[in-house]
Length: 501
Image 1 (cartoon, rainbow, N blue to C red):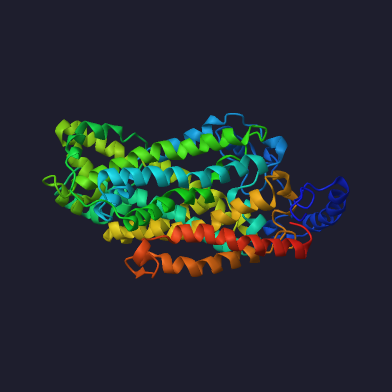
Image 2: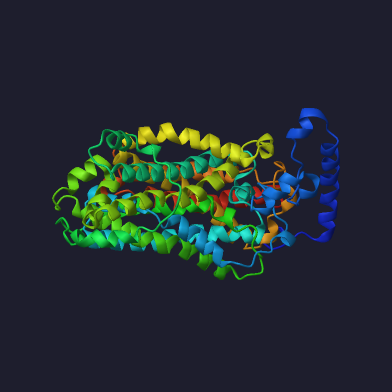
């Protein structure tokens, strides 16, 4: 059977020894290169090991205060010792407990014109469904010791995965841009009418959050939320179209989830780690998305809210909600603006890793260099996106849902169907050896074929496909399930031709 455990990668010792001979020879040759080549060369199959003893005292001091030494190299099982699995919950929970989900929730009632009830049910259902994918994919980190996009090489190949690296880095950066815009709008709303405030609102990407806080104090000024616009009952088209945005919000965590779990002990049951990651993403997001939907539903009917939303976006509405508590409300508003710092933090971490994976030479570049470069790029992009804020957010969430559908489907099917959850089949000795890894052709062709289904199912301002005219936007669903269907025979043929995974 082609998918037996033997063929799936639980390699016998004899095969390991034979494979090790050739790899050891290649490593020997790599170690004896000289000059610039030696500085830029990353040995085939090299894994993480502490190197503090080879560096100066200042380097050790950085490690002592928590600076991570490893980059994208696999973490061997003996180095995966963290048993505090609950911090997988807290890293996502604290990163998402901020004002970032609010504008996404507002789109349900302001753009898709759902009632608060229908919006809440749609948010609850699609959030519960779409969080499943990243929670499962995050389990691959502690089981394999591989970063998320390094795991992707075991289905997308060493070279084709570069396309996904760029898309993933752009997606995560995009969420940081959204967070920066919301932060800028909120800061601007603390001083409405001021020239500086107006400028900041129009260029909201200049928000610079430096601490975190919870948006729960908004409840103090939320009495106006009972006033909701009257709209007809939701149609299937409205629900599916907004559900596609929910997919774009949640399943894109599948490109980063494993990055946070690779140092955890692999002995823990899969369901335990799955639950921590799932709840860490789900529990902070859903209440805030629903709060955003309530804010959006009140905009057309509460006096002054429409003007505030037009001028300062989400920040303008929060300012009016906190107005009854006076100056303290402005103080809280500033704290809320700063709350996105945690989210930007968990975004910049995988972005730097993704950029390190683009070419071997980048592995040698300190990650903070990439973080600084991305931050510099975010400023002009944030300013541009802020000028057409609502449309930019809607298009961004929809488009990323399409590519994430391709990506998640391939990685999940690879792990469950072809590797049968045999995590040892993700062989560390080939993580950066292109000829040993899958070609990636099966994943690419499956995605391209499913794209032929996705395009007719798109419902956007710039294009409405023939399917979508009847069903609403079903691009995400077609991307995910279409890719899964096409990937099965294509990957089966690749494995049969290669004789191994």
